[in-house]
Every structure is written in structure tokens, then in C-alpha cells.
Length: 232
Image (cartoon, one colour):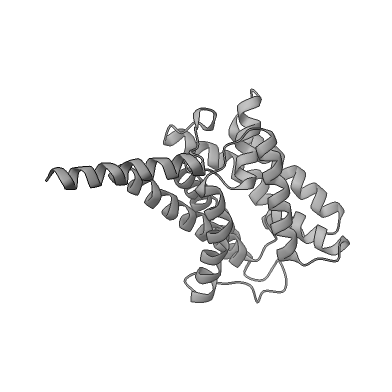
């Protein structure tokens, strides 16, 4: 039971740290993240909102994850449900310096660049924490894992290529791109790979626990606990 609880705590902490990193890049106000550029682009060519686009694309990518036989677990859906909520709390609480009122790239550029670059660290650390809990990755991270397992390419390069494709598609549809977007595309992959290497985490050997498997494990643990209680 303790091992299960530790993994669950690792999952939640990882998602919170990841949301903090995303909030940092957002507050720097130097451009949208690659996947958000894609969401923005779709929302401009289709009669649907940015948020609806994000959900729809997430579900579409999830279908591809399943076709690639990537294992989906509780972490996959907690990723979808919690990151946005935690992000909103961080931004609303004002725990980060915000440059959202800046209307030009030149205005307070130095601290904004620093914040955007530093955001790469909690983003990558959060990815490691929640993915290594092995409860399943979010749709976009699952796609990264699925491709990495099938190609002789480092995970950092895979992430950079996937985000680059999302950025290009979004930009061609009119999505908003800034210098921060380029920083995130070029920096996310290498920093993430460095963090994974430090913690000796290899996504190719990752075996995510599916929802039925987690439920069976919990059932066994509860039964074992009840049996021990009866013996006492």
C-alpha cells in the first residue's frame, strides 16, 4: 500500500510542478507553447473555441496513442483534468511575477526571457515525476513515448520534432508565435532529456499501469489489509 501511495503522490506532485512550469512560460508573455499555437490555429479556422480545440485534439491524439498500443491509465486522465486547474490556481494566486500586461517584446525583455528559459526546468522535472509514477502519461506525452519506443532517436529529439510539427501546423493556420515559442521548442527536448538522464529514466522501458490493473492492485491491497485485520 505504501508503494502505491508514494507513486500516487509522485504523480500529483509531478503534475503540479509541470503546471508551475507552464505557468512560468505563460506569465513571461513571449509567445504560446507549441501545442497552444496549434490549438490557436485550429480555433481560427474552425468555428470552435481555443479550449474546445484543446480537448478535441487531446482526444484525437489519445486515439492515436491507443492505436500505437500505448497504455492509458489514471495518470492520463488526471493529466487532462488537473494541469489546467492547477495552472489557473497558480496564475490567479499571483505567486509568479506576471508580464501579461506587456504589449511589446522589448518591454521588460530581460526578466521575461529569464523566466521563459527557467520554465524549462520545472516543466521537465514535472514530466519526469508524473511519468515515472507509471500511472499513464497524458495524450501528447504518450505520443512522445510511443514514437520514442519505435525509433532509434533520443526522447529529447522526438519531443522537439513533435512540438516542431505542432508549431508549424498551428502557425500555418494563423496561430500566435513569439520568441518564447521558439525557446520552448528548441529547449524543451534537450532539457527534458538531461533531466531524464540525471534520474536514469528511460521511457523505452516504461511500463504504464492501466486503469483495470490499478483497480485490481487496489483490490488486492484492500483484501490483504482486511485479512491482516482479521488475523489480528
